[in-house]
Length: 591
Image (cartoon, rainbow, N blue to C red; front, top):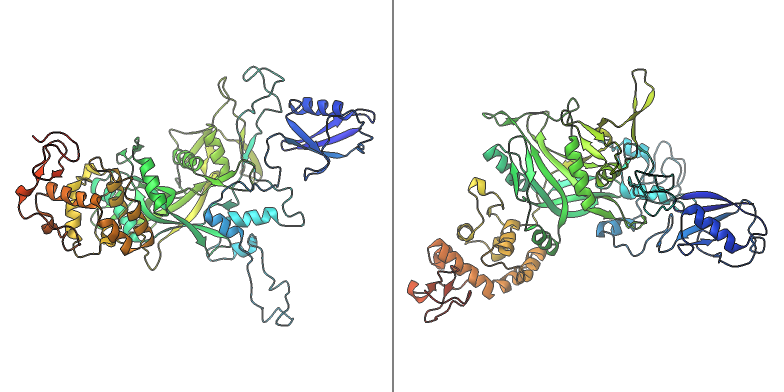
């Protein structure tokens, strides 16, 4: 007998006999697939019914015939091909789109439709969201279907996606193979990763990037305008439905956080950021998340009229290999939760935005992602940039320390024939997915402050975040409501991360007020001791009573009648009440 055994790693044919017992047959399967005796289970049916146990019954008694297909599932494997993982918590936007119909409804064609008002024909029947003809005829045409449209394509049809599975690519040798010595002494077809042929990805995880207003981008570009050096920042916002594309996803940008960095006119280096966790925590409490990163590549063309050089085009490159590797690194850090993948994740919604010169020599914002194949090559350290050609990458060669599978791409030769090339070097356009980047006609504001609190990590410009700048900011906002005053992303970061009086454990109510635009909650928090202390600090650093900074107009406590009513601690710069021998803040003696 020849019995076929289907596993998550492929199918194998196991020779047997009619009189062979189930126990002996299972030992053969374990040896063929490289499992121990308890490392797997075999079933007669794909839905895990009819398990074959290790027993002395013959295969004939178990009604297993020549050519039958059995199904192997490794122990501890929570899902099989096409099986949904209900324990994975997907993003809210993914849960919402999964419940939508997604079909493209068309009106009755007056010329082609010959049926009644309630009938349907091929000219007006609803189209599937992955219909390529419909996407190609949009204005402008859509080259990539949305990720959820791709899922509908996989899970559609008569089998309802029974055989569909989202598999993450791996470029590493599979561990646990005991039939030979480890690499570089040995390798076999069971543990060897498959060769990769790069294809242009047909879908994308994000279909549009939208900045809420121009102010967000203008403030980010101010650094380049004042210094001539490039700049990088993280995009914080939310994912929403993009209605222009069936089942599309939009990344809305509400704020840009600029981490510590060292930059010149031609280079950019990220430095260690001790505040990274606090920033993510604040953003989460505001209902935001990190949706991408942005960097500038700008060079002035004519400073008199404010034009910039058009350097990224089809004759050079859109993203360099080094930028693709960085984008892949960020996307691997922010993977996309997915119930149809056995790993619980697939791809990423993390986007890349480049501020660069356009064909009209004005600043343009271009959005990109890299493909899932690029993410795998970057994750497993198989892709390198070329030093002398930024538009080319290079697939590493195998070494005693690392086995690297062959990477290929297809192109046309001078005769128009499809030819397969080894990816050494590799044109990075095979790895890039472009995303439309837009600004709304009617600006939106998650943070409503009309004044500008200094942006973090801009000390080189003389723009520092300290209590003196806070006092200046508050004096400019004396006529605004308290909610509008504190509704500034960079101000909230300063209140939480400053070294003098961090409010990380006591600012939750204020963040809720900003998130829900609730003035009453903001007024409640303003009456707290923490805000009163912040006001006194601003008064001390600013060298003037709080009433002159507009605090009384904001409802804050009035300044003392005489400056001698309070004394400043020489150790921590906090104001303290008269008559005390020790500072109420740092507990050190008055001196």
